[in-house]
Image (cartoon, rainbow, N blue to C red; front, side, top):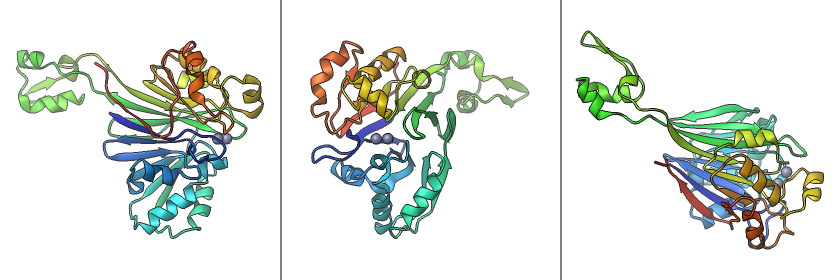
Length: 299
Ligand SMILES: [Zn+2]
Ligand SMILES: [Zn+2]
């Protein structure tokens, strides 16, 4: 399962009652943060999240509202005595930006960098993989897709009928062919068909594109941009998406649920647009800061 916390929902600048857009994802004790605008560490404290548990930070792009919280976060991690390695992924140049930021505070722990590319699976741990995909903004920008794979169901009755010794079941369940006792046991004899995993997708600061729709297809949860409620002209000029456009994308991509975020400071009451947006895509949510959800395998 994936635990998701939308730490903030604002775009451009933080407001007294709205942090900048940032997402925290937890998977089997690992923490992954997407974007770190000014105030993200304050949002983490407010929602009782530990800075030290972050293993990976994924940056969508290098506009200030997505990265200016990083020097402060690195400094706080250092002051709290962090020793474990932090990995920062982002567009080309991520190494230079983070090297500059780490000079501003006592950052003595190791920091690794990953330059991401379109359609690149750059992270894999256990059954979680993360894939970057290109967005279309006024600068190079990426979205991120999290996939948790699920192993096929093990057919106990079949394994018993085939008289496969219990000690080999676990290996077969993990897809391994077992040669033992002068016999060969094949996983496909005791495993069911492929099962749906979990997919979470996130993008912001982008025009809606067919490429994004293809990359986020079938997501259990899509977190996408609503810089403006329904102003397509302004969104087009500035390389952003309106809520209406993102609701259309979510519908076309067959996602199960959409959360909108990165509201412009002028977009004061996003909840007022809920009804209109749900007439386009019924499972649209207009979250406030701190919204949480646990994504589980569906039966
Ligand atoms: Zn932004
Ligand atoms: Zn931007």
